[in-house]
Structure formats: structure tokens, C-alpha cells
Image (tube, rainbow over all chains, first blue to last red; front, side, top):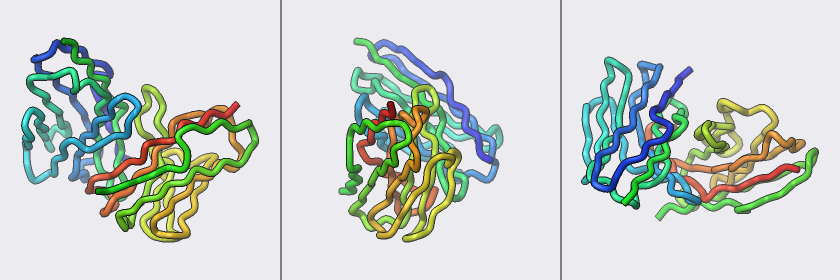
Length: 110
Length: 113
């Protein structure tokens, strides 16, 4: 079955720096890759997703890149702000469900 | 605006008790999911349902069962609660089964003593 590996598990940056979180997946049939953000004490919420027919997608300060050949995708956050501090989860679809990575705790210090 | 609600935010139960966690969504979504979230382990799928009375096992179904009698409601049942089931339980719903946004509930923090 699908396996999703996410790195790093924790990431600390200074406000204004960029942050990159990387995920790899095992099932070459996966075609949908969402990223969820979970702030402390709150529910996970979708922040961006990408489908296999595109290599990159941007939404203001966040972007996701996908390399289907290498089976990895990454989340890029530019000009980080304290409100970006949260746990980020990547996921890959299996056809019937999403398999999530173990999460990255991002801390942005001002 | 999609709304997914869960019956309790915090729950404390004793070992061996039967526990019911309920989830309700108001967006007429076909698909509903139950996850457990543990530190360092991410979100792990317990069960999902793609229609009323239909259910499928996820990655960690042992010790759990589910019920979906109405489209908007999906229940997770712990037949005989054990201490290793102490966790955060999150419900989610979506329009499509996999390649679509999932909307999560606020979670239920279950402690089994």
C-alpha cells in the first residue's frame, strides 16, 4: 500500500525566512497531493493541493512542487510569519483514501 | 460553509467500557472518515464510509467498529476501551472519496483509564 514519508519532523526558522517541507510517496498511481495545516488546538485545514498533471502550484506565500518521476513533493513557504507556526501534514491519495505523513512542526520566531 | 461537528471535545472512560464517538456533517457529503492522531504518528485512518451503511477498513481498524445509518452521521465505536486507545479522534467528510478536500471536525480527546 501507499507509504508517505515526511521530513523534517521539526523546523525552526526566523520570521521572514523561507521554510521547505518534503514528502516522498511509494505508489506511482497516486495523483492527488494535499497539504494540511493544523494550528495548536485546532482542526487540520487544507492550505494547498496539487494534482499530477502539474508540476507546481502557488498561492500567495505558499507553493507546492511535484516530481512524479522521483515520487516526491514539497511545500515551500516564503517570508514566514509567526502565524505560520503550526503542524503541517502532507498526504497522497490511494484511490479510496488519503495517506498522511507524520507531520512537521514549524516554529517561526520573531 | 462546511461544518463538521463531533459530539464531545473531551471524554474520559474506563477500561472495558463501550464508547461511542459521533460525527455529523451538514454538507451532504457522501464520504466520511475517522482518524486517530497521536504525537509523532500523524493522522492514521481507522475506518471510512462512502455511502449509508457502507464501510471500509483503514490502516488501524483493530478494536474499532463504525456505523453509518444516515448520510450525515458517522459513529465510531470502541467495543471495549483499552488504555492504548487513549488518543485524539478526528472525523472528516468529503465530496469525493480521495482526490478532494477533506473537512475535519474539531476532534475528541479520549482518555481511557
